[in-house]
Length: 243
Image (cartoon, rainbow, N blue to C red; front, side, top):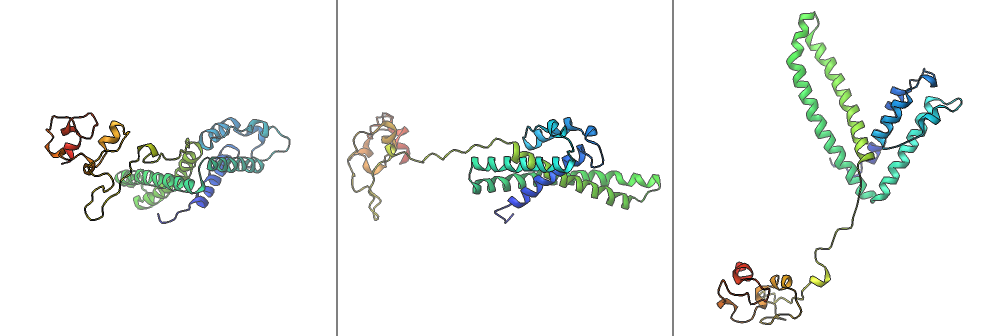
């Protein structure tokens, strides 16, 4: 919560996800011909956003699961660095923290729901001559391990596949919409133009003028009459609504 840089955690999560994918689809003691390359390719694309030539790599002579892991990890790190170049590093740190906290909040809520359900049904284990308390501890620990795995996977998927776009914020006021005003610090009046309307203003600019620049006698304008600012609106829909 207090940290401003979670990049090391995100980096470790990404590597753990790659390790899990390789372990699941390329078992260490299996031959390359037994690898689930199709499944791995699909998962790498959906989680890491990478379309890698895994089938070609797997067909190489003497290729091992460890080398496959290293290539996928490097490709994932390179792609993450490219995505960071789209926005600044500081903004990426904010995105990483936001995504991680949102995912922790979401999945922790789901975890608590699962624990509540487990508590409601764990007593039935006693009918099978099993200790409900030990059963609860074992299954609760499995649920927590699943929580951590899902947290790594989902956070990595978000950060690697969500579309990132950054645009410079538009200025609150463009130069052509600015109106020069010199306020008297004691009275609050526009001392430069009090009683005189600036020239060459659009209706929208006239509508935004302070009351202090309206011509003398503006207080006597009828509510349905034209506003003395020259915006073209009725007084009650323009400066009349301010007084």
